[in-house]
Length: 209
Length: 223
Image (cartoon, rainbow over all chains, first blue to last red; front, side, top):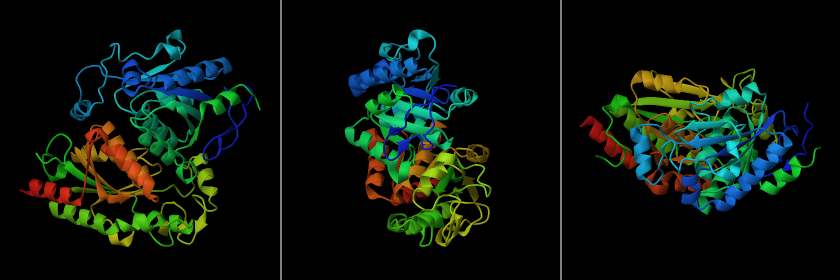
């Protein structure tokens, strides 16, 4: 059994709710940190933080999982409309579609889930991957905050996973949307889980309880 | 084409579902859960007349009508432990006994839809354990079986179950519209942030319209 980590002072409560998290039951999800999206959102600072989270999680023995949004073939009508509104689905295999090198996913040990929408759980094997390994707690980073990050955290929350978003490893299409989405996340004592800064998560990873 | 719909005109009234989210006593009425927590139900109650008008328009036009109710099995077997824990911090959590029965539990008075908006016989009622009406329900299967391709989503709360259902509908290929004047959040800043997110870039997941837009679109469907 892996040793437990310390609880994290997150907003609105100390995460996780039952105080129990270790490398055996927790994972880091890194959502949509792809070359084209990072460029469009000017998210280099958030990428650097996500890279730091991934390195620290791997060192501590936590599974790191990546998600990648893209398309393989023709777009549905609703997806085409979305692309017209400045949110293109990158062609699988294109330069924009690649996950940034800084996240270390080329190690072959990082599962990557591909999908065409926002929610990394929809029509993927992600839930089964997590359940078969006994994972209950999820730490999330992603782009954009109100897109992939929220859609995935919201779905995970409905499934009963105990979720925490890392605010400085996420960026919205505007600062107001980023802040608004995270305020809604924490509303009502954690409608969709909690929100913390990266340094709080990193400190806990390095300090067993 | 009416700018009401995101991409295309529905093939007829039965290709459209009006999805009314969680207009339940526990969220919208005196004596319900939110009210017992000491929160203001003014915002969620304020949309009851507009939702009633949207329902009347949809019934006249012959749209498919769906009502959802958030709540859990009586033995709470579908209630995640963290969801219950979070709500108990407020002193009255899901499954606990309140003045309108057990909070968000199926069959209790607080779980019912407010009388002003009661479902009529033949309308679809979806009982859901999560925020998204598509999570752990047969909503998608029932809509597809009925030939529905377009969703008009209204009800409460905008920042939670309404946007979750709207965005999950988009994800499943439905053309989705939310009616801004038929949805609300407990706290106004959260409603405003949600509307800003849904309207950004002209609506990435669908469109945002209002009751008058629905009336015009309904007129075209009948015409």
